[in-house]
Image 1 (cartoon, rainbow, N blue to C red):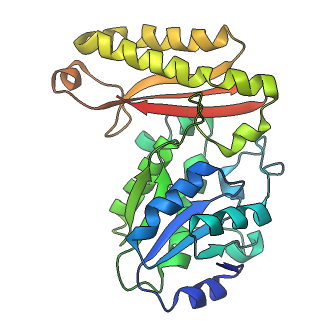
Image 2 (image 1 turned 90 degrees about the horizontal axis):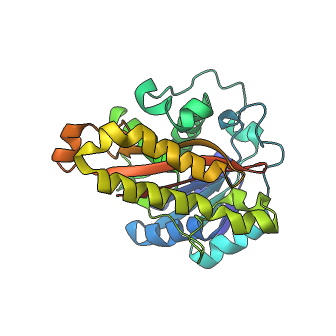
Length: 288
């Protein structure tokens, strides 16, 4: 496995290959990231992963400075998973000057849910992903694939729409959420949890599964009952000491609330939630 730190060296490392497979990460890797690498490896002739903590997607009060940087351990895990090239640029390398040009995704997709509670988040994500795509895929001659995990459900949808609207020659592949044996979605931020918080953290997935069952039971009456069902899910967490941001039922196609017509048509839905446990904010979702 080759570790490179500059765009020039990355492009040189990829020049001999036609079809890169790309897994972008912020490091502090877990088995969910490695599953994306393994899923993607058969799709191309070289597998690339980036490790870059992107300042643009962090609000001033968020954990940019304290986000774990674990490059050596990450590289060891990526090599075991079959990654061929790791791109770990410095901030100065990827942003040699202030990033004045940014990608602004449409508000109806990016300013709801995560975007509502983290204003500007998807501008930062879209901008860095667009830039990383230019770095990784510029020398490619054949199919190009990029993999994103479904745990960040809204994020992979924003990236997919960005690729479509800019006609980028990249196929987005969504990897299934990887979970611990008790059902907790794997996340780099799980490492912030205390032992007691880690035991409690699974309750986010429990509450979401309960909301999913309630939504299915409501069927065509869901639009009338949705607000009450979501409030019940938030209260279930709040009563255990959580601070919920949202617990909601949405259409998979555009993350808008379902209508009665959607229920009649058998519209596929997803339940999504975000809540803070102590100082740690966790997200999760289930397609239904």
